[in-house]
Image (tube, rainbow, N blue to C red):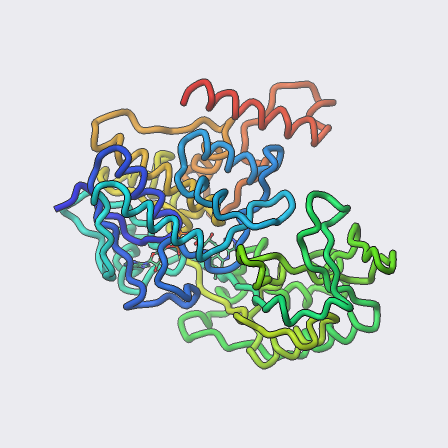
Length: 440
Ligand SMILES: Cc1cc2nc3c(=O)[nH]c(=O)nc-3n(C[C@H](O)[C@H](O)[C@H](O)COP(=O)(O)OP(=O)(O)OC[C@H]3O[C@@H](n4cnc5c(N)ncnc54)[C@H](O)[C@@H]3O)c2cc1C
């Protein structure tokens, strides 16, 4: 028997297992794929990125960028792998998914057999061994039901959607052009420009297109409206008004086609998805439209008239527990001390955040097994602020959250500085990095 069971070889589970192996503990890492697939994963790879291939900004004065820097200081394995697997994406950290998963797999095998990778679905939380539950937003139904019974809480969930990917060679570069917004960093995005008529035609197709019916369990009208605000399907954004997209994912400002010198009415951006630069995903185009409609919509975009669609967008349920009632800021379960939760199921929303909570759960399970004090980071760090936010017992209407500056402890400085956003973020970032570098 191993020292710890980790359920789910996703982003959080792989990071947690590696942290435990580094500390000398043996781990049974259970993954149900490929025997049982989720609605969003398409491979049997560990640590698969299900939608976009971007982990967000690397700039430490950005909330997500600071979180990555903190994870580097604290020794995250997957952030290091992500840097090795990176593809050009301006200031952001975007990865080649296949390469990334392959490197994670190599790492899982590199701890003298400490990590036993078992392809099997877990349907109940094992009661006789320390466990980290990292089964993600698409936790299988039986395990989700067991978690619901164990936690005694009503099931919480909302909806997420995935954006389509197209083949680069099928893009028409007589219309599309490379540029990054305001020429910042490399010109690594492909941009498909639209004039007013083209945008209006696109908008009409989008707003008239049929959507895929949600499954029975997802049909409840109260639930249907529950989308995560920063991952809204494009058709939901469009329904908010004709120009919403032009001020959102299709914002044209700062994207000039150097051949014409024109700033367009709207622009669809595509981001590199693999190291070989053969695949590009449509930025902010997560959707639940029927596949036929997606094809019609994408082919109406100038430059994508003949685009070969390699993956269509889909939408899924996203499961999370009531962390404020169930967990401490160490991610330890309040009512069962040898049980930790990690990843998106805790309500930390996003790839980087999922890896971060996997790292913390792994570190703390190792500390628990060694009878050491558990690591609870202060709110001056982004990771501390995140974990303290999701486990704050005072919270009444808990909803998943990304890293953001609003949850970090305020600076004790005069009003003038607090109002200068750039300076304030620089100071907040410096404060966290200095603290972590001094203590870890
Ligand atoms: C549809 C969708 C799109 C998303 N898009 C983005 C995005 O573009 N950007 C972003 O930052 N975040 C996105 N997220 C949010 C989140 O960052 C990812 O879901 C991320 O993969 C979560 O990491 P995780 O480790 O918690 O879960 P996962 O990476 O999903 O890992 C959980 C693993 O557990 C396995 N598993 C589930 N149940 C069992 C079981 N009973 N037994 C054994 N194994 C099991 C699953 O197969 C999976 O491999 C998206 C989420 C969803 C659902």
